[in-house]
Length: 317
Image (cartoon, rainbow, N blue to C red; front, top):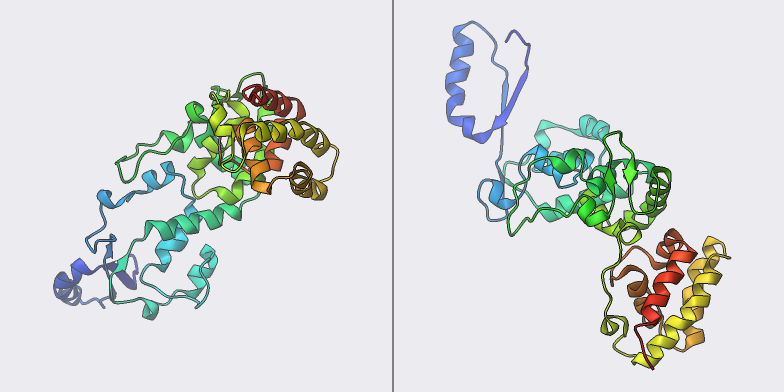
């Protein structure tokens, strides 16, 4: 009353107590506020949301790499309608468009996959500089990456920190990685942001996605290099031809670079995937990485050729 609160919004469990609260207001001669009881937010099994469904407190959402904008947007839309056909709402729009009569009476289901989608959308709206700032704690294992986390088989702990990225941070905030100084590391990371941005659902995923630059590659087996439709001799021919591909790549502008893989695949008489796959594994030791052309540029010509030669040496023909 003295705080001049006009509307009380609370969970539906308070409905049985409401008559008592209204009577208390009247007993003091006060006008009762409007009481609005919100439906429960449940897990996918219809039960009240709890830790077994996933993260439920804000620190855990932070430690798992969710952006505040994504959480606000998603939670605001649970059990409430705004503009039809639209999903992303900045906070100012949520404030402007909210109306009590748009609240649903039925309980809402907290869908972690839908929240993941929102998080990915807001990640893609970040500038490269902002994305680097947001992902750096998870890349280096500092800040939000140190918050307690409730890990389970269904919701394992994310892979963050130097163990996964190859980059650590000193007390003064400078970065450490093999054979690079702070400025070089930050420049490399910034160049990787547009490459990984489209592939991130969580900020935590950045650590593993940048690791191919900063960590020594694990041992690559000969079998991993050979595509299903190629034999060992043809694979060696493809990787040998990739030497000129890498050298030429650094002589072209961005538009021309994107067309070069197709040109070399045709020249070598293989499908594009059979050219890209062994080259990707040779350079990153993984079938999944940021876009290959951008990854090669980020590695640099010298390092890319060095890694390529090591894989070529594995193949005999």
